[in-house]
Amino acid sequence: MTEPLRNLDIEELVRLDTAHHLHPFTDYKALAAEGGSRIITRAEGVYLYDGHNNKIIDGMAGLWCVNVGYGRDDLAELAMQQMKVLPYYNTFFKTATAPSIELAAKVASKLPANFNHVFFANSGSEANDTQLRMVHHYWQCAGQPEKRFVISRENAYHGSTVAGASLGGMGPMHKQGGKLIPTIHHVMQPYWYKLGGDMTPEEFGLAAAKSLEDKILELGPENVGAFIGEPIQGAGGVIIPPSTYWPEINRICKKYDILLICDEVICGFGRTGNWFGLETFGIEPDLITMAKGLSSGYLPIAATGVSDRVANTIIENGGEFYHGYTYSGHPVACAVALRNIEIMEEEKLVENTRDVAGPHLAKRLAELADHPLVGEVRSVGLIGAIELVKDKKTRERFDPLGKVGTMCRDHFFKRNAIMRACGDTMVLSPPLVITPAEIDALIDVAKECIDATAKDIGVM
Ligand SMILES: *Cc1c(COP(=O)(O)O)cnc(C)c1O
Image 1 (cartoon, rainbow, N blue to C red):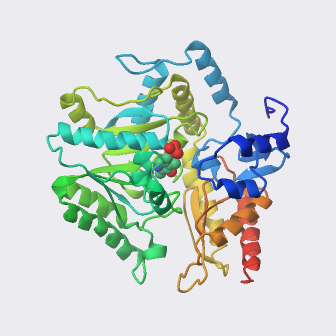
Image 2 (cartoon, helix red, strand yellow):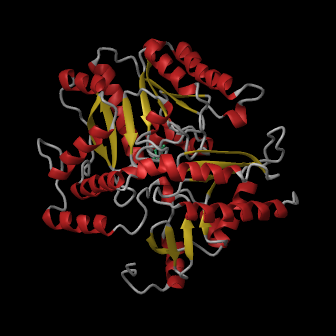
């Protein structure tokens, strides 16, 4: 494994970090009070190493993104070569670069047959900004400019820019002024465990989809341009919708002529055991958001997949699309993303997720279901969740939500393993290269951590 570039004085780094660095999604005062950040210095496969040389198993693939695992020399070497040949040129003004073209064609070949175009951005948030711009542009070109409303779901995550936070359904983000775009509305999420009550999951899937139809009728179908959803809500707590949900959403969007945007930022590139979550759930979108696994996080890049319906209309009738980013189609990021997809193909990582690693994870998670603190376990491919609850029978949650989850996450931290807490839902999304033995190690730690949490709160 390659050593860090410089000798690191970890204590000094922690001091400088606290003094100068405002982290994303962080309570600054609380972090400083706890002694500052853990400094990650290097990584290999599914393992991270921190400044004190602890070897940490990464059950989250960074932030749901390092699908091919850490330490890929060929991605590093390719980036270096591309930087030497052409570190940057833009794709504005009738120019392009070879990697941007090749990646566009490659991504199009992976998407459903009616998708032949992509538009590049640098993050999932930006790609969702592009979606919003694309939806408005499309309906103007289609002669129905009044179709301006976009409907999303409560507890959705679509990023952290103004458009991303507005599209998302995160209450705490909206409270800080994040819901700034008044044409965006939210409907019920398909979260059976929390909201399903006495309904079967199948009944509840239809009820949750009906909340979209109700909202469309309330706003007037002639005013609604698009619906956006993640196949599985990731940051919301790995919410896997009942099987009835997405087919009904397809039907409703078609009935009222509403564009369906599928946010594949987490599910895309193998996570659910198919190349895209839309295959797993039978979603029929008009627009697709991709980021994270597109480059396995080796460089920032994102893309909006555009169906023929939308692309043909804006190409034919749109004139200039006044939209884009300096780094749209960045040649180094594109070269790395292209090779990342080839690695996934060569090593059959999607098939492995579907046939080997995913089923193994499901089997091991099921062993936790009897635990007194565990209300439900669920997973698809290599994304999963463990619900920690106060009462298994009634599905009653702890109050306040998040305290027990945080305690559990801190136990993972102490044991050099990473799972994330979304409220009291422990979630995991490991690199797709994880082996069954490594999954065993992760779940063994999870069992210990849940036991320790149960002891903390006097349940065991
Ligand atoms: C992470 C995420 C985003 C935002 O991506 P960034 O690269 O952080 O801007 C958008 N949608 C979903 C579903 C995500 O998980």
